[in-house]
Image 1 (cartoon, rainbow, N blue to C red):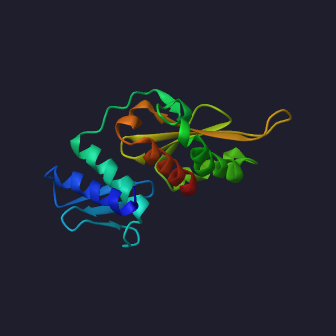
Image 2: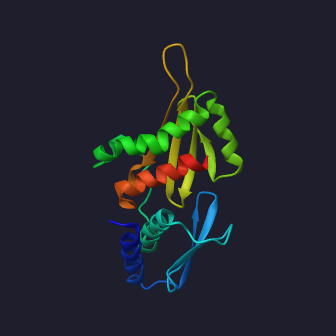
Length: 183
């Protein structure tokens, strides 16, 4: 499906919810104003329209949020353990994991610098771990391991099991890419 078709379908879904004309959505370090009536999404930080893949993610999230986000389960799953992800594993690794390893592989503690600029907090696990609030009700757990004599540096992203009630697999890959890019 093309971006245009996916965006139009998402707008149509929102229109059926009979909601307010405009809604604000926090996504990572930015806030977006979603004008449902005008079918426009603007970044509050730079007053620029959201790019298509950002718009799709925001619209899909907003549609679920307006109906009611699922409760967090507290069960963290790596991407590979979410159902139906087999064909997306290479894309996930390329978009999400490899950038983390390139950026933080030498010194995983450097990731703690994002705690001052993103909605994130330090967590337990691995050599360094943080929980980032990508959206309200959509936490992402990042774990990093430093290189040692036996193993190369490694990283992984974990998602609360509830994410599959919010996003499809492709959206989760896009979200993971945004997370990796933002930190």
